[in-house]
Image 1: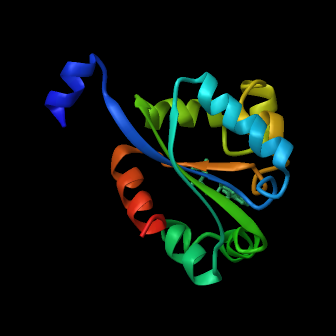
Image 2: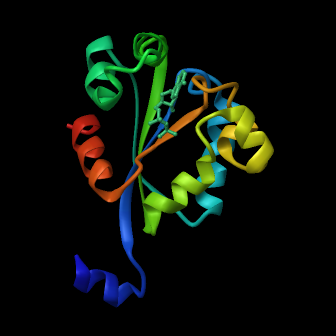
Length: 147
Ligand code: IDP
């Protein structure tokens, strides 16, 4: 991996992005987010639309199992279709997180008004999209979501 990075002159990474049920049904929003991904210099390597089971959501968000919002999060994430994306590019993990903005969409509108969550999210839970928070979690999430 290190050698490939040196040849390309930057850390080429892969990350997992997911458009959540609050936006995945709306094709104009989906296209808007994809245009932002493209504009940030990230490449969509893989795309899959599906509906996650409650069980899949519980596994995906296992680190939050003890949080009070967990049952509601699982209900939300399994309530409709999602769009799973594998993104690649230089610094893809951080680049996509920056493009996403803060978790809470209201905070995103204050602090990062051009971010995905500011533009398309609603609140703390219905925040339009997911992004892996590190290279290791990206690997875990990609292998979990793309069998
Ligand atoms: P992140 O998605 O920005 O990494 P996390 O803290 O990992 O944020 O939370 C995972 C997801 O759980 C969030 O994207 C959001 O949908 C939901 N969530 C986080 N905190 C809350 C909360 O306090 N209330 C309701 N839902 C929450």
